[in-house]
Structures are given as C-alpha cells and as structure tokens.
Image (cartoon, rainbow, N blue to C red; front, side, top):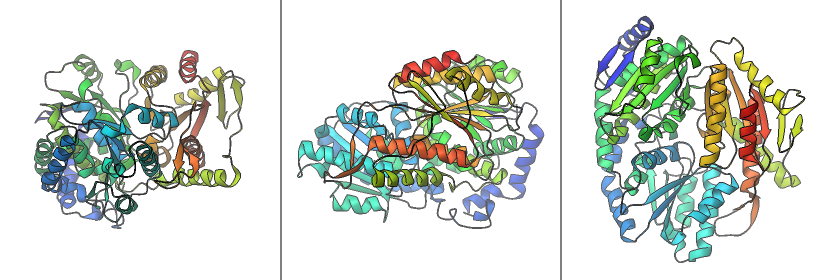
Length: 567
C-alpha cells in the first residue's frame, strides 16, 4: 500500500519506483507551488490558453461570494412556483449540473432538472413534450456564447415557449450562464432574459464544475451550495500540502501513463456513478493531444481480472459503508493491478472530488508533457460539420458516404470491403487483438436518441467486446462526446477503434434562424447528420480506424444483432 490517508489509498502493484520518482520531481521542481502561483511554464513555454484558464484554482471562493445573489434568485423561482428546469448546454456547461442532479436527486420544493445535450431531433422533441413551459425554467449555459448546439436549443425553445405563453411571458422563463462579453450575453439582453449570470472568463469549460456553471443549477435543485463549496475549499487547502491526495493522484496517473498504463478505469458506488461522465471529459480533453493521452473509462462492466489487459489503472470511488464492489476490487488488487481507492463520507464530498481531480489532472498533464487547457482537435469535427451544413444550404442535401454492405436495416460504411455485416463487425474488431503499445481501445459513438433501452443495449455490446478482446471500451452519445472525449479521439496516439452508430430519425424539428422568428434554414435532423459525418471524416483524416453502422429504423434490433454476431 503506497498511501493510506484521508480516505485515500493506493496499491502500487510494482510501480512504486516510478511513482516515487515522480513525487520527488514534483517536490524538487515545486510543481504544485508553481501551479498555485499560476506559472504557465509548468506546462509550456507559451502562456497562450494557460494564463487565461487558471481561474478554476479559485472557483470555491469566487462562487461562495456569489451565493447571496444565487440564493436570492432560487427563492424567487420557488416563490413563482416553477417546478422544472431544462438546462440547454454541451460539455463542461452541462456535465456538472447533470452530475449534481443525478447524484443528489430531487428535493421537495426545488426544481427538477433535466439536461438537453443532444441534437438528435427525437431527444429535442421528447424534452418539448416532457415539460409544461408555464412551470419550466430554461437555463441556457455556454461559456463562449456561440456553441452551435446550445444556441440552436435556445432559439428552438424560445420559439416554443413564445408560442405557448406569448411575448409578455416568454423572457421570464429563460436565464443565461455565460462569460462576460459573450454572444449569449448580448442575445440574452436583447431578448430580455430574466437573469444573466456572468462567470469568471478565466475558466475553461471542463474545469468549471465549481464555478457558476455548476453552482447555480446545484442551488436550483436544492443542494446546499455552501456545503459543496466548503468541501471543495478543504480540498483546495489540502492540495497545497506536500502529501496531498491530489498531488499523489496526479503523480500516479502521470507516471503510469508513461509506463503504458494509460486507461484510468473508474469503479464507483452506484449512487455516485454519474460522477464518471464529468471526470471523463476532464481527463480526456485535458490529456489527449499531440499523440499522447490518458483514456478515462467510466461505466464499464466490472469483471474479474482475466478480462483486463495490463494497461489499466483502476480508481475505486465509494461511499462510506458501501461495499458493493469491494470483493471484485480486491481480486483486481490480488492480480497486481494498480488500484486507487477513494472513500466519500457522504454525497457532499463531491465538492472535494471535483477539486481533487482538477488539480490531479493538471499534475498528470505536467508529467506526460501536455498542455491541459487547450483542445486543438475539438475544432476539426466542428469545421467539417460546418462545411456539411454549408453544402446543405447551397445544394439542399448533405454530402454522403458510399455503403460497403447492406443487410436489412443495417448499412455499413468504411474504408474496408466486407461481404456481410457479420464479417464487417468481426474483421474490424479483430484489429483490437493487434499487439500495440499502448494497447488498443474500442470507442462506441452513438449518434442515436439517448434513452434507457438504447443505453442498456450499448452496454451489452461494449461488454461483449471488452470480455472477448480484453480491451478498454468507452461509449458516448453524439454530439455530446465531441465536446469531451472527442479531443482525445483525434489527438492521442491513434490506438482507438471507432464504431459509429447512426439511425433514421422518425421526426424532425426546425432550428429557427433567429429566436422569435419562424424562418428556418436547417433542422436538428440535418445538424446531427452533419455532425456525425464531420466526426467520421475528422477521424479518417487523423488516420483513425473507424466503421459506421447505420441502423435504419430498428436501433435496438440492430445493436442486439451486432452484439450477437461478435464471435
């Protein structure tokens, strides 16, 4: 056991020397002290996208200073009998609020929060039908103020509420969370939103959980924001100690990644499992670039040791007195896998966990010689998607791929030739057995309507692959993952195998050209199709191995068929 303190322990499994050397480096180079002094040379010779991205170090104190204003607003909303909140956002703007809601659940008298971060038209229409606009607060959340998905959601729902409640009431149902001077701030002022929260602009989206992007929605759903921030502040203070857990965790991740143990696999107590989606973005988007990357693996089935390769670091985050996975984790330790164990005393330790992982990721990035605050490859898929949309507006149709095989509802696209669907999936996945260092991983990209049945089917599909090939597997709904793991997919060493799923949309919804006006140049169906195609081409351009399965009108049947024919 390398460390056992403050509900944090680590079994080194033969990596003690490299971790100890990294901890000594941290001390000798005063890395943590320099981070707190906002010394950009920790990561780069250039201050670009570093000096203006370190505001997260002080998020707890800044958000605490805003609590009086936030709590006053929450009481105002409660007094007006709002019942629901729909947060419209992507990536860092939406993940932390979703984690807060999904971990803490609903509290009587406060809002029931849902998050829309899918441009799938069925997902948009489902949210349209789910909430009575007269009882719903719409939270438009984007740092830049120009995120195409978020602004499209805003225009669509503004028009929807306008049509139901009229011009005099519509603005009272919208608030914005954004940076000062952003395009959204101007739009929100022009449309007379009832409230605009302006966040510290020196915080990147994936480091914004403890800023207003996370804390305002947390307060609206009845979480004690002061308590969350107090736990975060305790973690912040502790992180400056020479033996801090964030320091040790960052050293572990960085040292092991340099030893090709670069798949950080999360095992969590069921109630806190939603935390994985947030930390996935933090690690992937921070470390996956210039041919390097630490792959976060969350919500993967917890299996016995024989189903894993030696590229895994396991992180077991559990609630005190929850022993659900103890026996399985003990078997992993016995099999000499490195294991970090973190114990929460209660759900409010989430605040401390946000802070711990933000600093640990910054430290790990230093060790693997990565600048953690930029995202150079995220733009690639966006640029290609914009090109697709431009072609649509000019020609009335999107560019298309040529199918290589079609069987009933399933159509296969790729750079390979297959006689049938069975051969397509198995020949593609056999590449996972190639002896590659770092080892392969399989990424499943679902440009599908997010729902429980589809998620369950995707989980069965990934588990079949995981157990057969002993590779790390990830699953993400598009275009949500483009704002998180999408950076790593194009920026890492290129060891991923990418399986993209698309389908036919049963319905569609127009995206207004302007809020309050009916004219529309594109629909959500066109947008998500352009995003899927842009992502496909960005992967191909980066020499990634990718295959697309269009599932037609039978999404569940298609996923289950593919699961069954993996041999």
